[in-house]
Image (cartoon, rainbow, N blue to C red):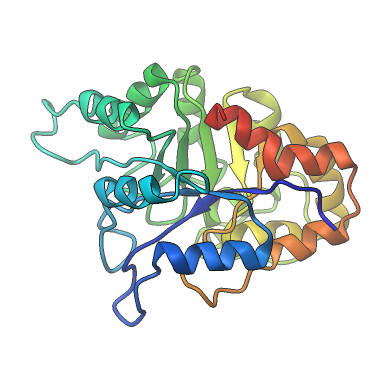
Length: 279
């Protein structure tokens, strides 16, 4: 059995897809109970590139107020709001933080990861002392193979806590990444790549293990995964990316089979999250 508590750093609620019923807070909590998860971060969706519908920060705050002991609200602001040169996201994010939001994201804008509008977000969340969950793939927070743009942002905004996630990020776990891997989940043995290099290099960078991309990065090479999890236990966050009530979650069983040190499990399952969320 995995040690408790377990904090899920990446979930969603609301009407997300046209062909699915809304994923209500009650449905989410039922799924969390089934999985043995104590608390979960709820990420709003306010970027048009992602799902079929928006889930606003206001709705997330309203939902989390009803379940304060289980659900933790994050906020979101699309960087393309208003006049691009005049728009300042800081006062909006500051207000959300004052109302209980403990982080920002999920960042899903269809822009280059170092776009000047994105940098306004990075600066604001760094000044406010909250983490930002970044989804990187071929269409959102865009970067080249090797993540040169993202690294520049991590270095430039050293006070900002970046939590990386998504197909491009996790494809970079292996050094033999190809451009086409940014749109898929590559298979086969891992040759240590940029993910571990960046996690070790930058104290303000973390990663969440959610979704198929996180699970695939580990399960494609279990032997590498065991060492990776142990070596980077202080920088990894358990997460599921739950979007619907019948969604399969394979990461918990995989982690249990790894037979990691108790200290490693505790950091990944809850201690790192408690630190970033200031619980």
